[in-house]
Image 1: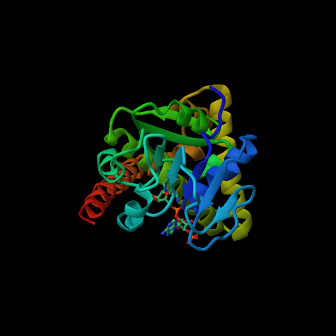
Image 2: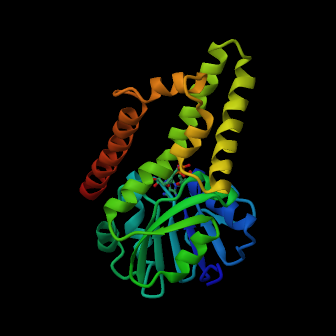
Length: 265
Ligand SMILES: NC(=O)c1ccc[n+]([C@@H]2O[C@H](COP(=O)([O-])OP(=O)(O)OC[C@H]3O[C@@H](n4cnc5c(N)ncnc54)[C@H](OP(=O)(O)O)[C@@H]3O)[C@@H](O)[C@H]2O)c1
């Protein structure tokens, strides 16, 4: 299925994440002529009509791109525009399809997504949980990277912690590597740039060669060599894996808390 917006299409809120998606669609050559961004500041979004109030039209596609905490305020007036011709797409962390169905009872279909910032360069990961016929949404998301159809809220939350929040975790790791390099005497800016390049190059190599991360590490670490000595630190019982487990658990737990906060209004 080719990627096309069912017009008229509204993007309600377009900050970091929805803005990255617009960048990705523009980059992929998706027609944005039927799309309108609605945001209070009216800050222009390149290539898309941007307004501050809901247009006088029935939208066939509405994407929620604001913070979850704004849902209670935005949903009542917006739901008057969302009818049986409208597919609703939400990227609100933690907010469940059940909650959205309650707030937008007339929507033809609802899709929950949890994209990540690399959608801007066509390298995103987008889990989708669907309630109703949302095939067109999958095609739109496929223009932004890898789509992962999900069967449960739990899967979306887990992929969100891994790949969406994960962009921030990978950024932190690269930053820590840069600082570590600076600690070994490199110029801090150079060390940071090289850490990012090494991360990018490692990911590209693994994808190109279709090898596992374990195999990749094995190819770098010769027995009794320098890499092996460093890996022993990361692989210590309370090392990297334990830290990552705690990190993802904390993110998933926060998603559940957010859902509860939003549900209570
Ligand atoms: N950032 C990520 O990596 C990421 C990843 C996955 C999911 N998400 C989800 O994406 C959503 C947005 O996050 P973000 O990081 O993009 O936040 P953000 O940069 O702060 O953007 C929030 C957007 O909401 C708009 N907004 C605020 N009040 C509004 C209202 N009353 N009506 C319509 N729009 C309104 C803002 O408009 P103005 O700019 O005009 O004020 C802005 O465009 C969140 O629900 C988050 O859970 C984010």
